[in-house]
Image (tube, rainbow, N blue to C red; front, side):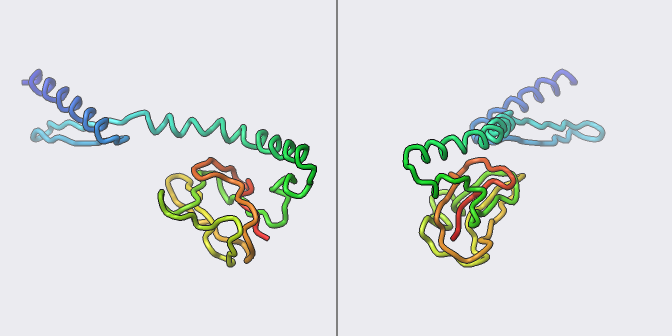
Length: 167
């Protein structure tokens, strides 16, 4: 009888793994109750999510070093010092209050919260920073006009990194 349970359990776990893959799920957890003091707890998960979370880590370390280089190249090419200054030191810079992933719109396929040239009011949502699976709306710290958006949709962002310029 134990061997029969074992064979059925293996088939059951294989079926769960197949369901996980076919439906692009990251995890499935099931408890089978065979009777008194006889049950099976199964948790099947894919490493896909862990790999995706680990991939942005080097981007956080590389982002500060990579950001000044294009700004310096723009200063050499354009000869203008205004737009090529460090955006973090700009008085109208809106810094990220946390580490996370930036989203410029509420949902994929919807219009962005704001665009360059848009007038914004204090407290108006500018974008979202996702941190630990929580969507955090980032409000405008002051009224003004969006002059530059310094981040791309879906890009990782560090604490204190400039998100946009409002003048």
